Image 1: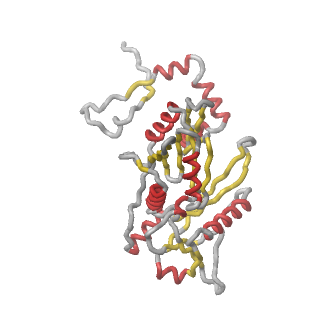
Image 2: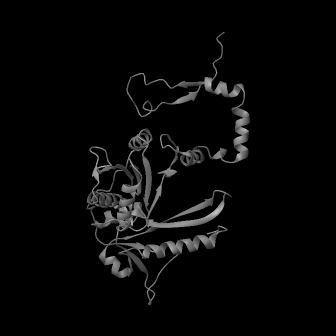
Image 3: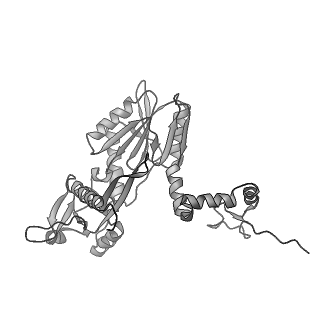
Length: 330
């Protein structure tokens, strides 16, 4: 690792693995014992940096150790181990999320956000024993030099069934707390009392509450979940949810949503050559001033549909292109 922040990265990686070892049900085992008891998965580590928004300088680094899911599938297939539960889960879709936001603005409701950190490790699981190799930054050995691996108690991100098992755990607990699922709308719930009501939408470990009067029902639910799960955080009148930026008026009758982080991410992915400020300034100078911008707009035209009338993958999407100037006919 050649990063100038190498020591910080290494320490963050070690501390992350210490935290993983301390998760309920996890424990270190000798590799020869693990080999005969269950599959051993490789570890994959996700490194992230957090910037201080006021200075745009490095604030801290974070590391999360997960199961290498792709290799894990091959390990299970080679051992002939079948999945006991589905390997997919459902989340609140974008339309339902925007309906919750629109309804909240129309009826001037109160918003509360909750987040379950490391949600999967809070889930119940029905799968057998599984093990995870130590990351290169934090290898462990027994007294006689034998390699140690981590026996996984609850699910870990990267395991194929982890998302489904977390969803089943959360839904079971919400039902026990008195929440009722919406019919035919996945991941939407309601709770009603004589003088109050609350709507809840869930996107994996992110929970958004929309309440008629104050935050009492949301707060009571979150407090109950804190007694069941580790790492539950919450916020009244949130300014962001699931990647969206939220701006709510003081009267709560207007809520503006936007995706600045996603837009920036897509911009860096699709137009990396324009990330430097100098490159963007040059592009604007060449293409977006005066009549040039108008010419670009005038040159946009619809791609014609397939002459056969068949709807293909291409014609399903509205596309535009800049047409080449036609030479005048002689």
